[in-house]
Image (tube, rainbow, N blue to C red; front, side, top):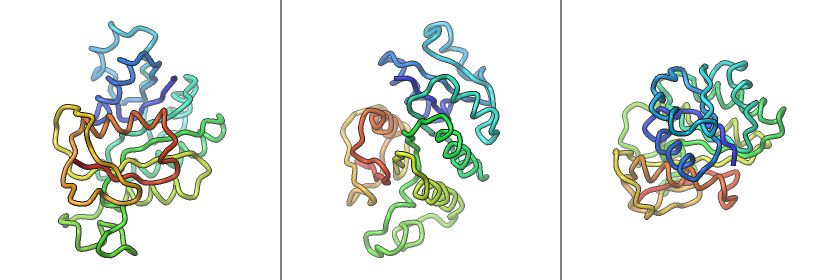
Length: 211
């Protein structure tokens, strides 16, 4: 495959990059600081294409997509701004222009449906323990933008994300967090996210993931 990866220097994105390169895929990454990936360059040659730029800049995103991507994965962080929703709006437009349909993003369990109050998102219900809803609201905007788009999207929605190794053993559920789930490591979240490039089981839906 030929992938465009956003958020490659983040806690989840770095693992996705590792998995894709280990499997021999061509990966283009759009990053603000290429020096954070300088340790990769010598070992992967033309298999890894590093594009310096900003995920909220249309020209930069368009340039990264010109690498011939057949699928796009976004593991961008909210960083307290509108980066996610601005980037998704750009991707929806630019991917259509280049006839790329598959998009997988990493969201948050807060935008899954509540089990106790099914008409609400988890972040709006009594299920959440977070006082601030800023990040969840930004992820919700992403979900709404994708829901209205024609893309073949999947939003992977992890709960509490501690650092940890990949086990490959976890539970997933469409639209809801697996019952009793309380955490999932960054490496296993990356594992499931990466696997969606080859799967259409969860197209146009949110997927909760937890142990």
